[in-house]
Length: 609
Image (cartoon, rainbow, N blue to C red):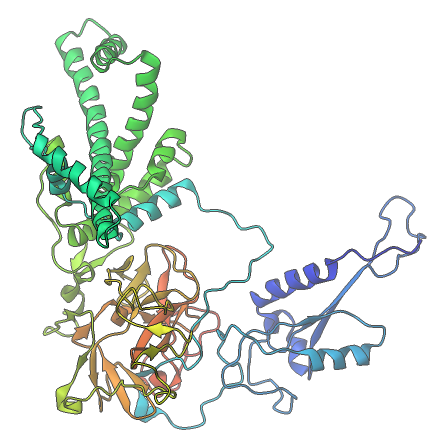
């Protein structure tokens, strides 16, 4: 066969695909002989051949692609591995599945691989050669902060095709984002903004004074005064909130109209039984067309969407309409995935949506008074004071889930850590002296991660490492709920929306103390002091993050205004996934219980008691 040119990038694509597949597989089980190899590699070559009839005698082409995959770091560590293998041992290692092109000389090829091995940069994999060098039983149940850098936000774009979430998934995520957003759903906003009195009659009182005030505000904003921008911000926020309330009212009224439409047909059918239900439906429909002033086609198209609103409401409750994002219109119009399974998923979310809506927006039910629904709040208190169930069962108070273990259980939700004065007095052991304190200009705080200035003043702050936690923003409860795990781990944390890699999930807060032993506690240290964050009686939702040997989040230290903080950082969490951490070997040392993470790489499934 004539010589052919190599396709550009073919070797890299083949190597990357095989590398990703092996990364998800346990090659020690599939290839048991690999344990006897000092430095295993996988060599792949591709040729061009003729597969047609009588092609047995056809010559094979020259090699069109070749790749070598390093298997050392892909293997699962075990006792059968040779201790004399020439591996470089790292305390914390990251995936480094290296691939190298073939050369004509095999020995030279392997040597090139050894020389060109690069150090992983993600910092997400626990070292496969890490062993406990000391007896950590005295540190039992003491969790450790991950000493690696927190995951970076920059992600490597994958060339493989990724399926996009369904329309139903987008609808559900949109509802959670609206509930945990900054929109203030208070009916008073629209009543005050447009001077509408919520009367039983349809009379709407227009007040010229209110219009004058609005125009005056607009004219004031036109003037380029120092406060004009702030005034326009306030005005725009009020208009946005009023518009959002109007959209919610629009959907719940339209869903109620569909219910009344069906009720009217039943009433007329019962009153005049001689006519068929179809004729009664036509008569009611034509009456509605006359009242609306619309054509039959126009009303029929709108009713199709309104009927979708009603079906969503029947499954997921009124909260799903009030807090629905813009995606609900497309979902109800095109009805993609509008089936029994979708309605089952929405029914399971009904109570969970009401918990979040009642605790974060206690006035939202007042909107339902417009359609004659009760406005009584069912779930009060802190949003993480309720434990929800994935199967749609009624939520229960947090305290109730611990009474079997401790009938005196009590937990207080706080936003900032509290210093234990009995242990530290008036000092804060989290203080971190900056290395360039002498060179600091005007007492400014410089971020050790990004090198930018830190400040609680939005005009001065330039550090955006964790903008949802630190800076000028007011912290809001994240889209996370405490849920009852189905696998015996008691409570856990479930992500309601996705958390991108490197995104902050929350700050681990609690009682800043020392000397706690035999209890679940986080051990932390600065160059000047060793301290602990204890969350047994006070803290926040991070207390309920369970352990996993393959976690999707990690705890990292971050310094804000010269004070060390512990931040839970995402490694890439999808919506609906449980948020987990790696507690560390010291926590499990001599602990009389087994890990329930269920991962194939579990390190503590069976333990010597």
